[in-house]
Image 1 (cartoon, chains in turn red, blue):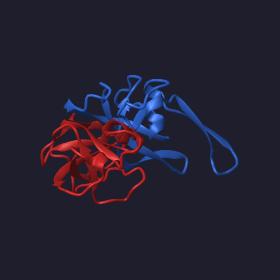
Image 2 (image 1 turned 135 degrees about the horizontal axis):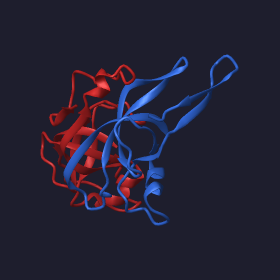
Image 3 (image 1 turned 180 degrees about the horizontal axis):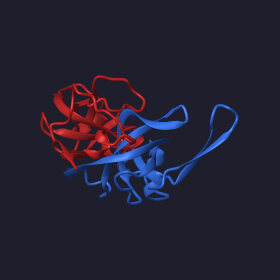
Image 4 (image 1 turned 90 degrees about the vertical axis):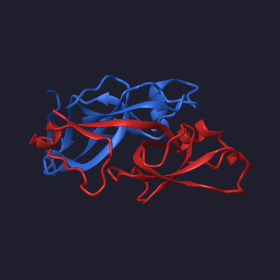
Length: 115
Length: 107
């Protein structure tokens, strides 16, 4: 799954019939981890009704395709949820045994640090 | 599958109806660093299936295999591509010097 920010939408009049009535959204991942792609953005089918600027979770691959249509649909990613809050334990960054660092340049708007 | 440590949680109320109503956890990926496992700085998002908590070392399963963690055999309608499949108690690895090193992850 990819956590990212919805930064735009795609409009198209001529498209594959299996994409009819499908809203397409452009999501910019937070680059914490990209399982198989090193990409700047993902275009995903939106069935949840997310708006520009919101944080969303994107499901990629077969599960995303089945949910937005069937196995014949030309779909690779779909939005699964709109994120309200992202919590990261403060201990995880201060604790010497867990010294992981988040990228400074792009962070979720909804990120909160908890003790 | 990857090895990682649970560091946080994601909350969402508006979800796709096919989304399994599970906790969404943030997992810091652990990489091999000499004889230790250190976080690589990468964080992944995964659905919890076994009640993992902050600090637990877990394995995350990717792709269609993640759906198999939830339900069998007809799991095509489940929307999940990353699932926490087990809480790791310990690992045994080759140290690089021909010895086997045991590592306990229990708290």
